[in-house]
Image (tube, rainbow, N blue to C red; front, side):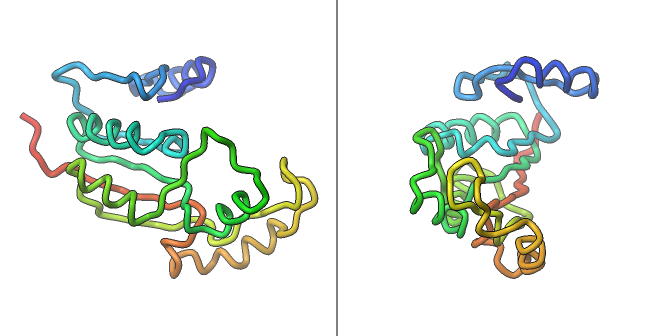
Length: 167
């Protein structure tokens, strides 16, 4: 699913057997009998406020067995930096891994896998990645520690399942 019509058309061409939705996820409704083996929501959640996120998770629980999803972590160095520098846009919402886990569980999902990605991300002195303070090579070296700091990484990735059997 994506809001961008051109991107969705490109996905449809590359993956003709995959159903691609092109719409605002906040307005998404599924048919009563729609079911999906896997739903992916990558780089989406930071555009949803808490109420929209919880509503989406509840809708997805009703239609999928497996959910692959990530958040931009409020507890990360990256988030701390963009907040401190005033780079964060009003339409961006960050959640902590513990908050996010709770929302998934409230919706009925069981988390089966977690991974942190990017303990350190390239940050810059100015908006638009100008005058890098932390270069990419340094981030790559430090990020070898990602697996030890899952809940401190910039991106928090989760695989969750719906254990209810679809009839």
